[in-house]
Image (cartoon, rainbow, N blue to C red):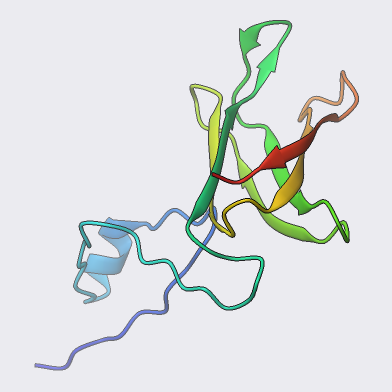
Length: 118
């Protein structure tokens, strides 16, 4: 029996498990996500939040996190159906700013500044 090795996808990627199984891949679910620290901006910190529009849950919003000191984009994601989003693998204490973009372009982007990963 041949074993197929799949590539590891990070970020906002959602795997199509039925398609992978159909192609012969074995799905192994780990109890906890694996975090790999590749540089000083990465670590075991997280930033969590929720996207709202006029105090109402607003899903499917593109949200980006930037390192405050050099404006480097670290991660991007899309908020879930309940408006929540989370960024992992950020150095604890790293000062960042978050930008959220209205997918309907009815409002300007919203920025939360001075956010620190915990």
